Image 1: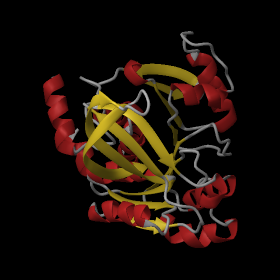
Image 2: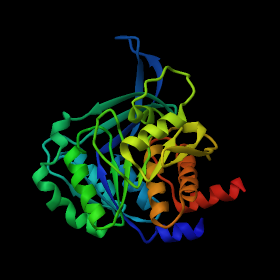
Image 3: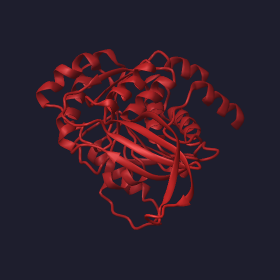
Image 4: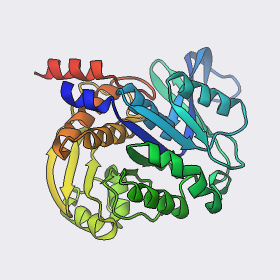
Length: 322
């Protein structure tokens, strides 16, 4: 693991996707409002962190590599704050053309429990880049990186044209391509080096509707996803059940979760795609890269709020497991 983390520190990853600002309102509630049957929150503090695709970039730098993030940053206070958070971590930000406001997710936290979430965002077309500007915007960025991660949160930044053109640039320059999909927006893609849906997303990609509490049809899902998208590696994250590995449409082993205690699963998928991509690009086989991702996600879900993981925390986690 030490050797792998050392190789990771030499990599540069380009993340393309829906960036957002995560806003947390922390407080306490000891009374009910006389105006409505709702708790009154006494606010103690506000904190901000990078969310969505921006959190993928944060996880990459936290693991020791270099990251560039390309996404829509609005010309507003939230956009400036988000850029500041990323720049402070040494991440290069590239703002793509658009006309919306910065996406902001506000979570109200009371006694370590999320009470509610408030979302601020513009309609999807406001975040899409003009297809004529894609190649000029991304050509140099792709040339300078070792891999491209598409991080889709179904907000409108990723379009068929953008994914196709940036993927073509990546293949031309022999760069690794990773996709964390959001099938609720049907984006066309084909033959990524790694595809990392969660359980629900895998069902959607496979076109399978399933009743709650039904067994996960792994063989059928893996076969259908491979038939449609031809990923070189498919890793389906199954929350507490670990990660299912698949090769050429056939389900393989399930790598068990490494989480010791779960406080918050927010951003765990961001951590997984970052670690899997870094591990594979650094030369690890899929099983080794998945172990790294499992370790990283296991640390992150033990933290409250959108979080990242460091090499030191991973090595400490390994030592404790052993």
